[in-house]
Length: 93
Length: 418
Image (cartoon, rainbow over all chains, first blue to last red):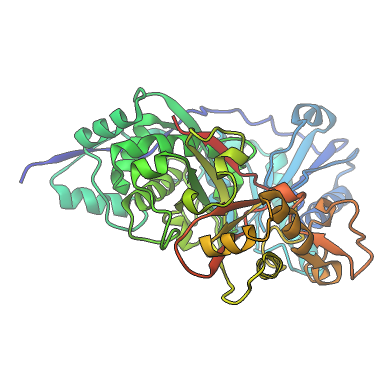
């Protein structure tokens, strides 16, 4: 029986490598961002994380940005990134 | 950094990898979040806290390597196997299929399929999420071969994929959501007859190669190119039989109004495909009504349930009502235009605010301003305006129509088939 060659049905991702933002040396004095996707209980979760974090680290404050719903991307992220030192997002149901 | 529940690790890892950031820190907590008490949510936050601090302050290189899987960019474009059986079994094992038997994409078949498109093999038609991979004409042709398409079907498939890639459609979310929406393709125009697309008995069902294979090819592209693999890039709780194949055609001869494509701004001589983020069709049985108003009342009642995404939660999307020819005839006999039908259904297909409160007013911020959220007897529509209730006639004889709810945040998109 002869061999057979077939084509791959997969597509090619050309995103390349994107550098992560540098990690922070300390959270002290940092303005934290909450990027929220508007799913039920998601904001409560993120706010509680930041609240707990603030008990051990003197953060400068919090800037919350809410998407209208989880299904669409957030706009104005470049400007948002300038307002905060770190961003906490979440994904789930 | 990102907080993620255990059930969404696969999607989170895939997505960070596909966007070029495989080492994006994740804080992993128990699932779920929705429907849990504040006490539980606060416990989840405590569980996340040390991971969040570590993710924000630790060098990613110091963490264990990513467990990313299914690296699309590393796959060879050709595979050689000892024989057909090995090729078939390998494709199934690597999850390159929908689980059904398929046609092996050998070069000769793929070339014929590309020729059917009238385009260059390397032309990029869309970048398909959540893998964010390029769907070239060749990629599409390969999946069309696997699905059992004939080459003349390619222009429909390409136009449908272009439509699905329109930002208004929101393909990323349609692919990745826990909701059971599929990509419903509605074909309108002369090409319906030319390709032998079924629009009579069993319009949503099996038995017709053009409908079955075009719909299946779209699904294979969404899986193989887009990475919409169940449990990975596709997080659907149940999925849907509609995810195997979902391509229907307009029964233009039985349509008492202008053809569907004309309502979308195209000419009668054009052929179009419209994509909806549709759930499977919900039947509307009415064997007795003899007037437009009574028949449409039955239709509106079927549309008025609070569990689907359009009801009360996300009124920004659109929905589809597929009238059977007999219902359409009954309605049109009452001198109702398509616009009259849309207006009637918009005004009748509404849920009481008091009932929607069972869903904790979920997404109430998306409701029209004129809905009084403090009045339990106030009525909330399922879409934002009458024109968002799309109407088509399809199917054979019988006293049935169908309602197709959608993902909700998605808008249908139409493209001309060229």
